[in-house]
Image 1 (cartoon, one colour):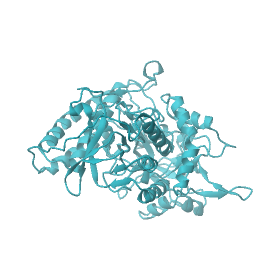
Image 2 (tube, helix red, strand yellow; image 1 turned 45 degrees about the horizontal axis):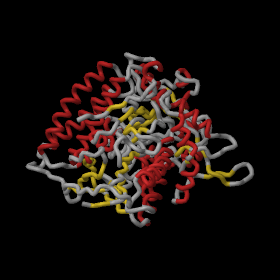
Image 3 (cartoon, helix red, strand yellow; image 1 turned 180 degrees about the vertical axis):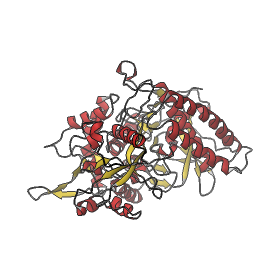
Image 4 (tube, helix red, strand yellow; image 1 turned 135 degrees about the vertical axis):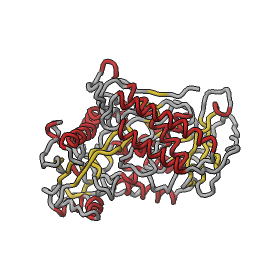
Length: 535
């Protein structure tokens, strides 16, 4: 059994920033399912939103934009808290070595350059070219390597949280650790801590088409739900409007920052269509733009729409978006001369494990931070670039909450965790079935539970998922655990939560749109969809 004062599951901005701060107060173990660099943070292109230019911007304006994008489901006090603590968190990132792009103002003074994205009424997105997430991830990992008191466990797949309830204690339910599969040895390791922090990211891989890396399979939400935590608003899956449409690069994101710099959307006939859907045009919030693109593709019969930034100077485009420019060149698209074919793809999980603004879940001893959590900041539809902001701000608040409610060294009930028991199981010899089920989940979610939904499609998805859950459960109990099997188990769990949540919400709001209830219903549905497992 490995014991730590703090155990962090995940290695994106939320997990790494928490670990760096927490290492000053005790030992920290970071558990991550693949290489530490493999996270949604690394793939973030656009940047991190924060009020920085107080002459042109204000916390009130940022709060208003966030509330507007969230379609009535964001608690204003939560939004205001996170937005107002942004500048301090940005300075902390800079102290850790993160470099944001700069430019000279009219007086010749060099200042941080601010971009603008959909839904923002001001320029407030700090960025590092079009690889902001990688810049943050690389510097935080470098700081982790230099820090004392931190052990990093790569290729360790978290299986399940351990609670006092599962151990048979009569006390109030509490998280006391977890089991994790060491993929190098095949052994299951027991980790013990009174402070477990879920930072596992989102669940984009539950869909056939996504902008997310392969690690985004909803593991944290699935584990927390199995442990009895409340899960909220899983129906609000944000589809990014502009994923590159090309058979060789299926998950490549074209950042919203490009539209912030003047790029426009056109249909296959060269018609600019976004003004017909929203007066903000291509800079409308993501839910509106994604639905508009979906409708235009269906209306025109074209396979995609096109994003055009060719009216901007070529040297500006290639220097502002070097990663996109160079990547598109590899498939014969010169974005300084050619329109970029794009389609929507699953991008961000607006719901998640229910928490307060400090990341505290409904289970003592367990905090959740970042995309895995639902603080309410994103409501029914996330404002662009608010995700990295939430991760770095709430991770700080979560640590403070840990230290206040259960500081390391405080007397707690001594608990010895049992080792993992595999029982009488055999090696998985039907991998083809696992891969088939994995593919089926992602296809049915795309076909039945994507941008536009109906009650009948949701019912079909629910029926098929129940059969798949039974098959996966049988596999789980009869075979030795592998990362493929664990991922499949979590995917079907999260897919079911998304479908159940979507079926309950009898309206259209934000990222949830159903043809059977096309209007927003504030009287009955201006509330969270909360699910909790009993028994």
